[in-house]
Length: 350
Image (cartoon, rainbow, N blue to C red):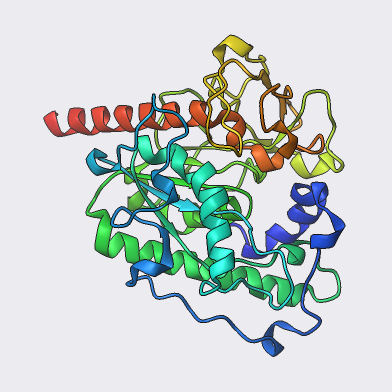
């Protein structure tokens, strides 16, 4: 694997979580080895999947009657990695047996983010021993933070291998995630897809909320058009006109405009925008934002004048990377699956 699993710490401190609130930067006062380790999830048991085609879950939800959960007839799969939701004291890694934490994951990222993809594929979202939020800022014991991160990734790698062995059956795959989930998604792409046979099954990867350096992958390339397959799409959203607190963290990073699905710096216009869905999850607001890729490696987005926009409490729109473009991502994922299947059918005919 080209990149190191431990590169995440510097990026996170400088870039992603500069929006953080001080009260959440909590880590244990003991080392990784001294803290009780949560039980390893067993992915042969359905309860360790926060979303799965064989259960009713929040990934089945839709915000408006015009869109439908199409997982039962889908010809592709989505492997979704949720962002950090473990904020509190008590450990370096979240416990997948923690019902309060599990409900929060179901209500927030699974309903608001994973559900985007229920029109494009069957959704598989594993519970995992996510690294505690405060570890992204850890200065006194960075080794424990790194070990916590590696534990989280090891769970997701095992879950992905279980999925490949028992559920995939050669089906096309979308990798999707956000924030910590995107960081792990990058490593899944490196370990299982980049220049490897499984790359032939990759529809696309949607991994916003984490800068991806241009030399991260050996073979995989960033998406350059709405129809391209076998590529990855990433963006980090900021208020139009804002400069990130640490812009150097985005240097040489790839970014796409999730309205036009191009990497150029031409701004999209509001009429092109397919729709924002906010936390109330009860409306789609079309033509709500304009967006522009900045050469510095991040995305400018106009503030949407919609119900629920209070969740965006600063000029860093990180928390809403998916919500701002909910319908745009949904329709694009459907398009890329369609194009992937057409290419596959043509290859068989030839």
